[in-house]
Image 1 (cartoon, protein in one colour):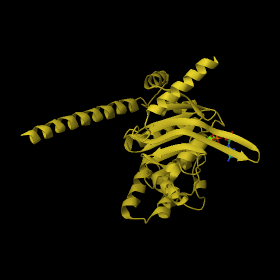
Image 2: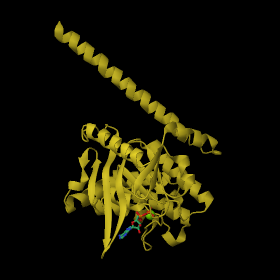
Image 3: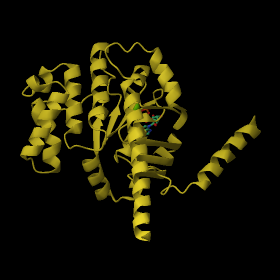
Image 4: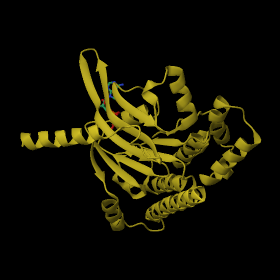
Length: 306
Ligand SMILES: Nc1ncnc2c1ncn2[C@@H]1O[C@H](COP(=O)(O)OP(=O)(O)O)[C@@H](O)[C@H]1O
Ligand SMILES: [Mg+2]
């Protein structure tokens, strides 16, 4: 037993040594996490929240990370979002190591690249829905016509055009959460991190939020969505699924497994399997691009040799 464990460890080590982390990162990988450890210290007590975590997230994909309470989900999102720092390990975002950033640069990174959706939408009670969504823009930059138009588009996306002037206490829990999603998107961040986004919602409202998150990657294929949850139902919207246990990825479900899993699910009007077709299309486009490059290269060589 111990031997096979060691062999597994060595295999893992060898694989990692073969890899040059920076050059090994594919172009469509937005986030890559390598050997991440986070140890919280409280007096003499140490809690290891991340224990050598390795995972990656791609553009145009919605990754769902599942795991029981206390397994390190929120910690992982906080690290990706630059809200806190790892004890050791690396986080590459667009090939740049964010663990090396100064505090100011990390704050800038967070402001310009990250949108957070929490279990309880963090709306300001005195402001209207629209003002809440405009707030992150106002804090980061000047408001202009284009940004106002984008906010209008977001209200359409979340289906709350008629509710813009309402204050949070005049909205239902699901509506508040949808305003929270719009606010997370308002600065047009590349990365959207959702922490138990449906945790507080009833099942009908939950489906609406799931649908909305799914729609975001459909509409904005440059965005990367990461959803952490302990709710198995969110598997339905996943392009990729990771399981965490005790601060480590314990299992990554393959496309095939995930597809089979989803085929079992009653999808009703929500055609979540569409995301697989979308991915098929994306792959085909990538391959076409490669062929295009190849032909162009051949023609260039021919022309140069003449
Ligand atoms: N600020 C902190 N100080 C000490 N321990 C913490 C802190 N934040 C999280 N933890 C601990 O780290 C572990 C992982 O927590 P968390 O990432 O919140 O898990 P999850 O989101 O999966 O429920 C838990 O054991 C939790 O108690
Ligand atoms: Mg949590």
